[in-house]
Length: 239
Figure 1 (tube, one colour):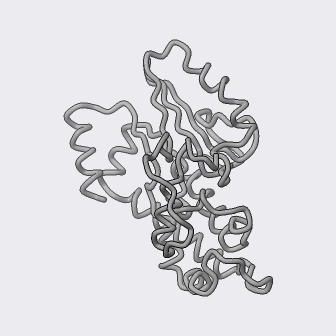
Figure 2: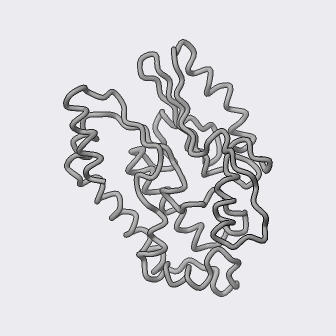
């Protein structure tokens, strides 16, 4: 990771960059469920299944572990000399992606998302994302955040005659949709803001199309996980 930022810093020194684009995965949120003892223990016992009512609670210890974990993740990155040099010299537009919270979060069903430990850790991850990667809080977002309502963190910017639209495909995602109706209704306005741009770069955490067939449901779990990822694109039948 340090080598990547050092390489980008070297590129910037030779030919100054105008904008850094964070396409997701700047931190590994899934590691919280492995590295935080209380969260890891809960996840080993319950996973993504339906926890019994007495187990479906976010304890104070869990919340503190999550807060400390995500803060440490961001501080480790921000303290990297190469990244610190770039962050001080080049503006950055970072996309909110499920790697920042829980890999596969966008494919969970509604019941899994409502599980208190998973929901709680997700909100902690979102809080630190807004603070470190957007320089804001969720209730006071910067001008680059274009939502009119709801939780969507889609961002847009113009750099000369280039337009950049970084879509939030996590906050409103369900198995049967990429964006909410409210966000789709805002899409014409989002595109209108790029009027006069020569090019428009759309950053999407999900590909427009994956040439992979659906796999039978009787296959083992690891292959079913591959199947779920293969169906996670814009033109999937479920959308």
